[in-house]
Length: 383
Image (cartoon, rainbow, N blue to C red; front, side, top):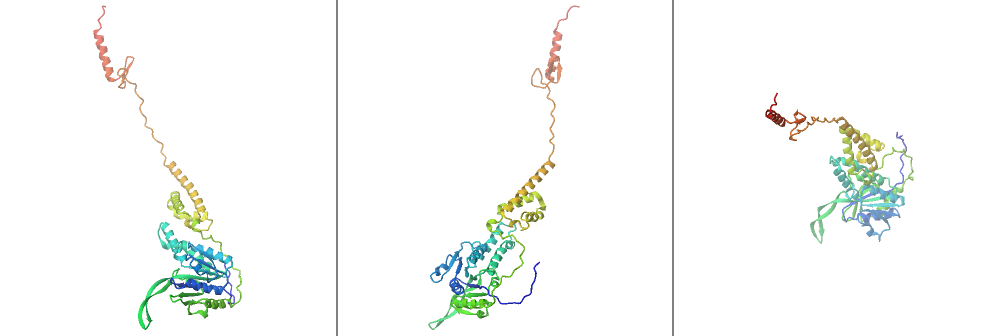
């Protein structure tokens, strides 16, 4: 049981959590690098934009990890690498790919839905949401200063512009909501939009000095203000926390049960347990995973193979029992003993015996007539 504790609130030194959102061309990457340079010396950029950040390597000193797949789990691994290497600042450019990029959350939901029997995308989020939450948790607890950029959904509005004494309307590209899961902005200390005029507009800030700020070509001054605010306080202490109940680590795509194994498992389960399979399934999955999960979709290939092997044995035993119960002793038809053939015609069966011969009816009649005729022709002997 978690033990609650009341203590005096104190301001502690902390690391920056900054989110910059804007449409393409607004200057998110460049602004992020300027702010990063003021927060620390060693900067790491997790680049998802085809090495676009490296185009500024002549102006800024930083290292990079270039991603070509955007699963939330890959982001977590990159963040952990950066922290272990001791970087002062980590820039994620951009976080939007973890939501709608290749292997991102939305694509993974589509995959889970496609292989499910119900085709219910709402239910598919039960598998993908833990991956997204793990990424959010990794960002919140990052030991380095963290700056993320996010693409904004773009739209065009008509704006009145005056040039050379003439006033007319022109379409202007503007950013809407950032491309990420709703509510992501709650995880950051400072959230700002950057428009096409490279104007940084702070929409959320826990730092009062930046609340509502609008800065043209923002950069190092934002970082210096945040650095002063974050360093004001007592050093952060490593407080002992109650150990959570051990949970099964989130499986990677290559570590989860394959669709073929899943179909085989359910097919054998229905054969072995019939209508009781739905009730028995959770019990067997819990047993083979040692209590780590109740869902067959979260089994590892090794756990799935063990369960399939057991179901195969159960199905074979059931088939054998059914075969024994349904077995009927075959009734062999008894054929009458073959009758001897006619000694005369050799075709028809013998029906009577005439003298020493077995004859059919026709041959027997013929033999009788012949014998009678011979008897009449025989001369009578004198007495």
